[in-house]
Image (cartoon, rainbow, N blue to C red; front, side, top):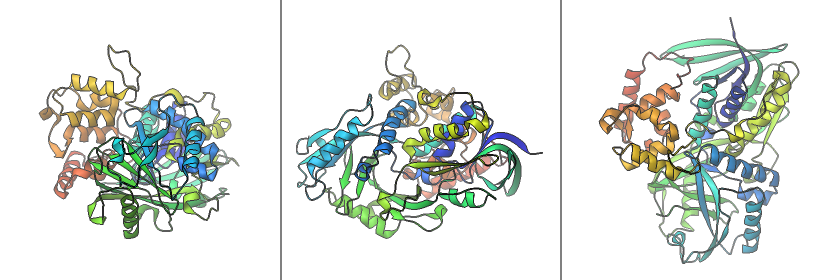
Length: 517
């Protein structure tokens, strides 16, 4: 007999996870299925920014920028462990956009939405500011403004975790192979493979959300009788990571001769992240890789500004993703809108297609999706996520009267409670897990009690937590999506972790959600 749900969400990226969380919090019976790992594709391949999109002002995307700026403040409060303020320095290149235009754009950026956490923009003398030291001498003046940094893959996982703890069922490595409408119900077939076995699960749902990202158009086409009035353009974005190019905490935004911009951002303490490219993509969305030309382009653009020159040989890691953007017929890939469109086919049991979007506006997208489905699903509850912290985001500081999103005060309290944790590990735990790091550490009172160090900085206690609570199944899940410890690993570390996973969890059954801790 098929299991019954109110809502089936297809896709475990940021939009699918956000919709599942919102729906579960309103009391709906929710099932989310993801064909691979959570955030395995687009949602872990962003530039890691919660931002309004300063450059979108040039394309008159004022509505999108305002909505994103409003969400920036909401998310900074909801997850202050994985999202935090970041100052961006823009050296002024007189051969590019004129200074008056930049000042006007920054003024608009500061005032389009209310700011309570982030400081305003202002001009900068690069000869006197620390951010000027790594730059070539030609750059004397610039501007500085604020946005937010995000651990994008963890943002997806925390939304899925919150959904699960509110009653949703989360199935990773589980593909929706078919869906058909039967009056007021959807009948769907899910398939999962684990330990060499294929398991089939039949489900019924009152509504389906197609949040399959780059595969959304293909999924919609495969559903008999489903409407699909819009399409996607797949835009490839690639990034490179090099050893740290500067010591200060600011990021850079560089204007380039082709009118594009790239970012150079402090990354994982020891590195600099540089990106992104914008290229039309027509290949397999699951196998996207950076090209040699993209590496050369990013190095060249960084070398226009930094005194320390880099080449492909300096690149320690790269990642690429495909952004599924709403097809608005723009000739320039960089000009394709980053806004989203929700299309609801309500001829019988509703199916809602998610076209486009950006990580910053995922929560608002989820609210709008539930509003569109509310009459079909009989929803009475009002929107609730705008004031609710994500798991670990409620940073409490006993005995101190501070804002709950004050991470520095929280970290000091962590170091006081766990003096035996090395400073770097304490900071990483606090950043990754926030107020929930106690669940990972448990009753341990020494580093040895966290178990074997399976890879640099990764102890058994954390690996077990990630498997039991956050759906991790492979070394890549742990080293690249739940953390970025892969940057410090050699092949033997990966092999050791894979062996540990195989031994520890050989009996794990497919189509299972982890138990909430």
